[in-house]
Image (cartoon, rainbow, N blue to C red):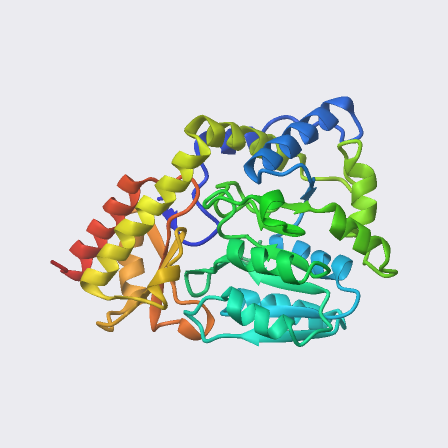
Length: 356
Ligand SMILES: *Cc1c(COP(=O)(O)O)cnc(C)c1O
């Protein structure tokens, strides 16, 4: 039996999208491909309220995280850490030999404008990395406010945002907020199979990239820009994913972006209320994520046994990530899941654990 995915990625993929992935293949140096690529780019631009370039990368999000720092960091990058995914980005910079510092807060806390201001004031930074939704802790940091501060006080600092687990689940206004790179894999809130990542890149970021001699090869923004200008990619893309993205974005706009964001929030609110009633919500509740709810296992139930029983009923949820394994658990409510789906899920857990 298929287990419905209530995990923070990959997420449940609807039947129409599985069908779209099976569309017969075309060559990627054809007009038909360029038209498909252009449609996808325009739809992602609309989603992010931007006129900036949008790249379609055949890779997981991690690849683009690496590409972003390689293309943007000329002097020194400040990584903001509040969990395992933001830590990964810092590890990536280190693995590339880039000068990198960290601003770290305990897990469950958010990265705030005040903290960023104090650290950037030390000087020497030309790039800031932010993790919008830290999936390992279920915390959505106030990126619009941080960006506003940075744009006002540190005009030369590029703002790079990992929006992997919230793009298409919360609003992102790339141009208005003054962001320079925002990236996401499509296996989370886009509800597509894993293997494609999208990124908006500002002209400021492209200018910076032109000054950097060794940007790497596959994710070289300048080389990708040359091809993107004619709606193409340097290497063969996952064309199947573009068919799927093109179609899924039609579903998104048919629902309405505001409705989509409200649906994510409604699912989150249901999960939070349920978590407070039976367990405890992890972390600073003011920044609780709209796409994944992180819950402390206060009663010490056997998570593996619960998930096994849920599996028999056709669903699966996530254990705590990394250091949280066994101590917390996470319910992903992103993509095309509905309020009815999460209500059904929590009712199943109530039944299995005998919660009332
Ligand atoms: C899932 C996730 C990643 C990693 O994405 P991949 O597509 O597996 O590389 C990075 N950052 C965040 C915040 C995530 O949720």
